[in-house]
Each structure stands twice: as structure tokens, then as C-alpha cells.
Length: 321
Ligand code: PMV
Image (cartoon, rainbow, N blue to C red; front, top):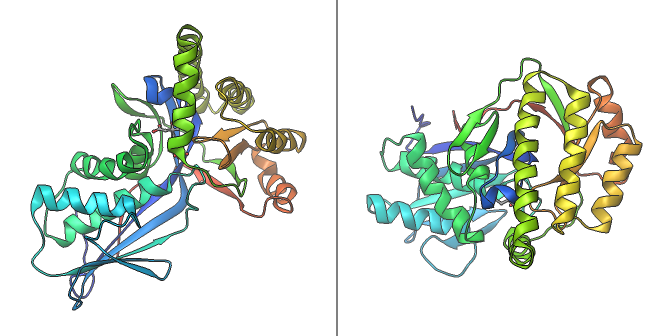
């Protein structure tokens, strides 16, 4: 992989957020899932600084890179694991993060920041990294926020595209011959993935047998979604997305508010709609009739201004000039 540095030693990388089309939560416990990178990105710029301490800057807030005060937890744990693996760089540096991905929205903001930071900082240090090495470093950031991530978010940010994924076999890219538009609607309610994951763990511990059946169904649905994408069979894809929402409701990660939003998208003629990511708030995706994608966006935007269309597929990690 080639790193590009601009005038001085400054390195800028960017990585996309993601949506999950089916299989979230179940993927943590071993099922298949389908994810896609989206057209919202996080950017990391690493440059030398004359300050006494290396620092992280985001949204006008600055924090020393080594102070363990919980601020910028993801970035700090990525930096700590880079130092552990490769030693500290000779010069002090500044990491500037600019992200278009709303945090806590189910759109993979922390994974995108972790991937962009891992790539930019190691490149700044002169290390030549493989994708696997960048992924492993970025995963440390994800683990610091929710303990046992499946790795699907990191994979989407790193590799981009649309893919079928499970923990055992990793990603299998899905080729889609016709560009596809998905609608993403941020409910406006942020939440913590870790809390939703432990809620699902409780459901699983109370009903291990039933959970296994739901998990198998989610895995099967993901393979079906992959097939519908390959064939560009959008009516089938829409109904699989609806089925996937039912399985998420069964494990308690939907809310009345999200159910209402999903129903209004279906009433507005979406082919299918569901939560994307951990649920409990966050975001919803809808599959528009492709010729009516703009119309669906307009219909929903008055109530949900943080809505956007994303064409699929999207590029993964990128070195910016
Ligand atoms: O953190 P989110 O909302 O982007 O969701 C991540 C997807 C989960 O399946 C809930 C967790 C995981 O690690 O796969």
C-alpha cells in the first residue's frame, strides 16, 4: 500500500463509515452479516508539532495524546498500541480528526476514525503496513469502546465496498453490477453500542435455544441478501431487509420511535427498511425504488433532517493528497 505525504511530513488519510444491511448483533455471536461502506468519511491528519507533547485535536478540542483521561478513547488506544508495537516516533506530532460521520449513530464512526488514525500515524512514522496490520491496530480502538466487536465495522472502513462477513472467515466481497442508492436516516438519538450488546447478551443468556434459532435465521438472511444484491433483485432485497428488522425486534434493539420511523419509510414507498447497527436509537436504512430515491429523501427530510442517500459501493481507506 502506498502512502502519500504532502509538502512537509504531514500525512492525511480518510476512511468511510458503514451501514449493516443484515445480521448486526448476531454477527458478534458468529452469524453472517452484510455490510457496506457509505459516502461519509472520517479524516485523520498527522503532522509534526513544536508543542512539548503530542496531541489530538477534534472539533476544536485538544487533548495530550498520552494522558489517560478518557477523551478520544478510541484514538488513544490506537496510538498506545502503535507505540507498543513500533516504539514512539522521534518527533512530537499532532493528530487532527475531521469526521462527517455522526458519533453514536450506528454508522461506524469510531471504526472509521480508528482505521484512518492507524494508517496515518504508522505512515507518519515511516512504517509500511499491510491492510491486515492496519485492521489489527484499528481493532484495538473498537475493543476499547465495546469489548467484543465482530470486526465488521473496521472491515468496512478499511476495504470499502459491500461484503458478506462472519468472524471465522472474514469478508467476502459482493459484486454489484448496477450502482445502488440506499437511504440513511439518523434518528437524532445517540446511544452506546456496548449497552445494546450487553442487552442482547442478556436475551441470549435467558433464552439460549431460541437465540440460536434466530442466529441461524439471521445468517441465512445474510446469505440471501448477498444473493439478491448480486442479482440486483431489489424487491427481494427489500423484503429481506424487512425480515431482518423483525429479527432485530425479537432481540429487543428496536424502539417505538424507530418502529414508527421504519413504518413511515415503508408508507413512503420504500421497498424495505430497518435499523442499521446496534439500534436503541442511531440510524435506519431504507431501500428506495431507485428511480424515486430523491423523492423518498425529500419525504423523510422534513421530519429527519439528518438523512442522506449513499450510492454503493464506496471506496475504503484512502490516502489524501
Ligand atoms: O456500533 P454500531 O452501531 O455501528 O454497530 C456495530 C454492529 C454490531 O453488530 C452491533 C456490533 C459488532 O461489533 O458487530
